[in-house]
Structures are given as C-alpha cells and as structure tokens.
Image 1 (cartoon, rainbow, N blue to C red):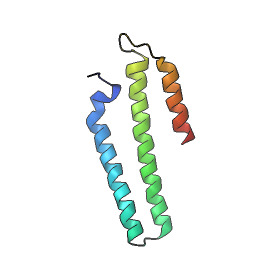
Image 2: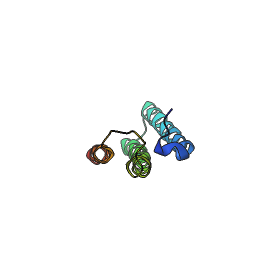
Image 3: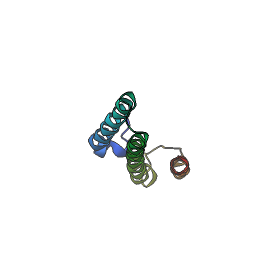
Length: 92
C-alpha cells in the first residue's frame, strides 16, 4: 500500500474530520429544532472553514511529500496535479 504525505498526520486529519462531522450533525439538529437562521449560517461557516483547513493541510502534505519528493516510478505531473487541486480549492 502506498504511503501518502498525510500519513504522519493521519490521526490529526481524522480528528479534524470527526469534529466537522459533529458540526454537520449539529446543523441538522439546529434545523430540526427551528434555531434562528443566522445561528445556523454561523455554524455552516465554521464547518466550511474546518473543511478548508483540512484541505490546506492535505495540500501542504501533498506538496511536501509527492511534489518535492515524487514516489519512485511515478509518471504523474505532480506540480500540475497540485495546481489543479489548488484551483478547485480556490473556486470553492
């Protein structure tokens, strides 16, 4: 199985994703409990920002691991791949 850049930080990534998962479940409860819409929007922003932080961390790991030191035998253009990921992140 290949080793990815985030392997050293896998537990941190999973912890962040679990926190975001909890925030999203909380959003459902807020809607179900008829919470004020601005409060829900604030929580949506928090969850969205959490996902962006995870994305930036994964991108950083990818650049350090796969772009700076491409896996042996890799025929992918790692810089182009990273640039495309950045473009998708900026568009979101």
